[in-house]
Image 1: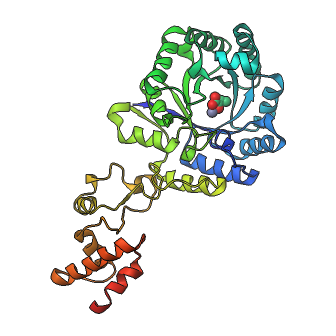
Image 2 (image 1 turned 90 degrees about the horizontal axis):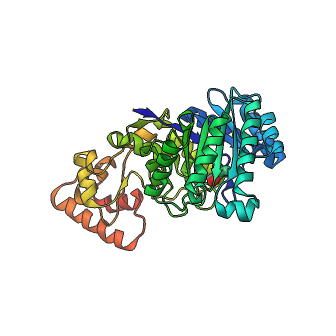
Image 3 (image 1 turned 90 degrees about the vertical axis):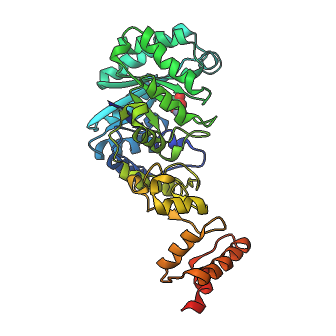
Amino acid sequence: MRKIEIFDTTLRDGEQSPGVSLTQEEKLEIARQLARLGVNIIEAGFAASSKGDFESVQRIANEVRGVSICSLARSTEKDIDQAYQALKGAEHPRIHVFLATSPIHMQHKLRMTPEQVLEQAEFAVKLARKYVPDVEFSAEDAGRSDLDFLVKVAEVAAKWGASVFNIPDTVGYLTPDEYGQIFKYIRDHASGADKLKLSAHCHDDLGMAVANSLAAILAGADQIEGAINGIGERAGNAAIEEVVLALATRPTIYQATTSLDLSQIARTSRLVSKLTGMVVQPNKAIVGANAFAHESGIHQDGMLKEKSTYEIIRPETVGMADTKLVLGKHSGRHAFKDHIASLGYDLDGEALNTVFRKFKDLCDKKKYVTDEDILSLLLEYE
Ligand code: KIV
Ligand code: ZN
């Protein structure tokens, strides 16, 4: 089994979710929980972006131990210097420099030629390496970059001592096949690529961030970047909990593991949701309120006989409360009998049929049937 490093950017790209702004205390609380979860790298912020971000990165760097702490920096002297000043108290500091490499970004945003981009990348990696041994270089918008140019950028990163070359699908444009091919191409064509860890950073604009991250793992990626609950710029980043559970659930496919303590996933998800104010949709994989809830009678019957009939992950594996058999209009007699037994009523035969029929009638009239509603149907059986 290969070990995949998990780079968490909940506090940087995740905080770029429109409407989210975390205080220093909140960021520290999340960083502590991420360390408990066992991520390998915490991107604590973008030190040069504001005084508040600088202080948050600095505090996390000084106070959170046992994990690499990272700050994002543009490929400029000022940004790299600020990143280092904020990170210098960290046990394992990482400076993450980025520069766009796609024709669209180079021409319209940077207004730089490809040659100038290569020079700037060299400058940034060299400077960051003067400060810290662990430098990550991101080729922003790699997904829409020319592959042979990307090879040249990776060679510059390797030559000047970057440890990680990140290949972001910045605008969530690629399909899993296309994304995986980039990793193979860089490995096969960039000289010095064997010295680099290759990293995936996927956005979810077409709903493919997790699938693309997994394709990158199959193509040899060493590090996956993502955010808890998949929060982040626009449609968000790859949801870390989904990537990690795919690896844990399908080991023969991915042949890869992570250092995460899976039982901390639900707690981390709840904390991030509470502090960012970003609600987790009920049907969200792994951490949604319905991820382990079964309503259909056929499913409930299967679950009561053997849980693996309809569950591929046990809720306790990720620290969620136990499976919920939700009583509703699709529920069957078996689950209903089981539920009223948990309320203290042991009915069979005609009595059970009568109450079950009344329960189904009620389900057609009410969106949510509560235990109080069910107890009122059982009054005559006291
Ligand atoms: O999406 C992106 O390209 C980024 C980089 C700064 C890594 O977030
Ligand atoms: Zn991003």
